Image (tube, rainbow, N blue to C red):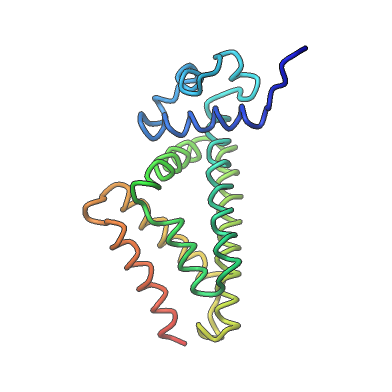
Length: 198
C-alpha cells in the first residue's frame, strides 16, 4: 500500500526549516540542500513543492503572515478601536527574543522584493491588507469617539504603518537602544497623540 503524504505538512516543514536557516544564516545561507537537511526530508522532495529559493521564501512569509493574522483575529474579537490597534502594533512592530526570527525573515523578504517584481507584488498585497485592517480599527475608534471625527483614516493608517515598520527595524538592528519596553512606549505615545486630539 502506497504511503500517504500530507503535502501541506511537508510544505510547512520546509517553510519552518527555511525560517530557521534565514534567522540563523541569512537568505544566502538558505540553500535548498540546507533546507532539506534542516527539515529532515529528501533534497529531491523539496522540488516537488518549491521550484526556487524565492518560492520557498514567499511560502515562509505567507506562513508567518497567516500565524500573525490568527493572533490578530483572536485579540480583535475581544477588543476594538484604539485598544485593538495598540495590540496589533505590539504584535507587528515589537521585536523581542520570540519575534526576532520573524523580523529577520521579513527583512530578507524585503531585500528580495526590492529586486524581484513577483515578490514586490506579493509584498504590496500583504501591505494593502494590513493597511485596510489598520484603517478599519481607526474607523471603529472614530465611531466610538476615541479620535476626531475628521480623522483621515486612510492617510493615518499609512502613517501608522510606516511608523511601526520603522520601530520594528530599529528594534531588530539596535536591541539595546530600542528594547521591547521602549518600542511599546513609542507606540502607545503615538496612539495617545491621536486620543489627545479628540
